[in-house]
Length: 325
Picture 1 (cartoon, rainbow, N blue to C red):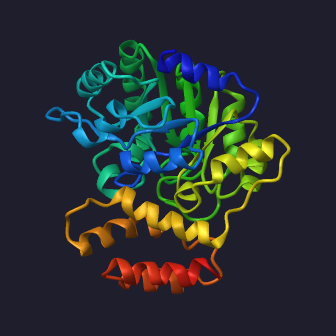
Picture 2 (picture 1 turned 120 degrees about the vertical axis):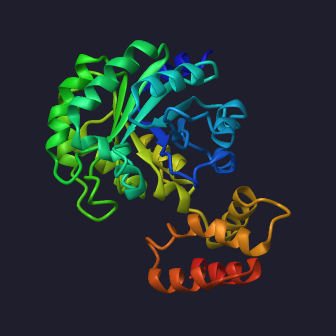
């Protein structure tokens, strides 16, 4: 079964498709391997390939495709605005085992959107249409898009929906915030629902899904065919199985405090590079631990203590105190 057929089979099931969100410098090959050991997502999106006239496929991101450890379909995500370069990279990526090519229209990092890429493109809908048309012609696997509602307001999504239909996009992921909203509260699931109603292809909802109860609520509110999870999966790798259990009518299994602490140890091994300075390793895992505060009784205390750590032993001591409460 090729990756496209695999994705089609997953989409044909009655339960929602569960995707791991692409998070730059976080959801890499090592992290995918760890997620798969804990149940994992149904489909994995790569970190974005930076695309411009002089770009080449980044080897470390490409490794997630060529050494995919999950047994699940991979979607290769691109970010950029130069049409010939995007077409060239799409063609290169399709030489590998990918289920889809995804266009990033949502990255809220200022260094990205100030270059009119990622979420910055939402300020230039006509330019997006040109990109969609060119990529639709070039992409022979599934062509997908991940977008936010707009740049600093939510008007862009209304203009994008008919373009997604016109250019035959195969799947759309909608993060229910604007670019300038970043990750603050106020996800507009109502606007995801409105957009989904106008899009004939499958739609995934993204934004603030941190538990199986959240997942059920978002599906109920939006009617989407699937969900994309990022931060929630980083702090709770069991979440994909918990959502599956909930939709099967089972009690979602909750990990013990010991299991949560053991996961941090696994995470350290998965995302750090052996043989490098301990301080560099500690600073590397802090990118992941920054998402652990949500759900804790004392999130700021944990984050402040964790961010001051300089050794693995010190880091684990902080985690043990906070995760075993």
